[in-house]
Picture (cartoon, rainbow, N blue to C red):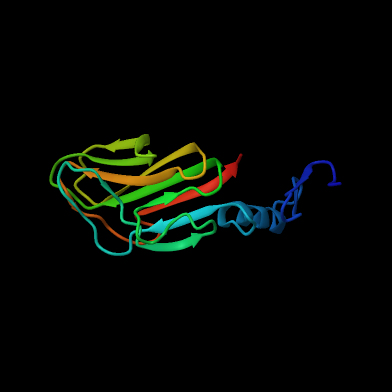
Length: 171
């Protein structure tokens, strides 16, 4: 039984103490964010080139992965397919190029329908837009990240630049 003022992380047994926010907390945070346990987790990103046509929404190309613990991504699709039912914390980020005019949009899709979105005003410099949502899923549900720019352009690439992440949170 953990001491008063602390909790035990069920899968790893790591004790988090409110009096010592050090290594135990770092271990628990690593478990939650990097999935060192058995929770489904996916992080895929755009590594190649993707050019948007003006005014046309397109799924962000997920051509590289950092982690996929539940085989949610086939490598040929620009979306993930949920294999383990539950509540997922989903984060999408798009790095749009500088534009002369127009507006940019980052949109999370759940089974093809908008789950969350963020609209950005005209920005004359390259910029990142992030969108996040908690999405309740059953097995075979799909999650995707769409990009829309009223002026078009080539998305900027990299694992921390244009990406989609999904973390299993609970049943």
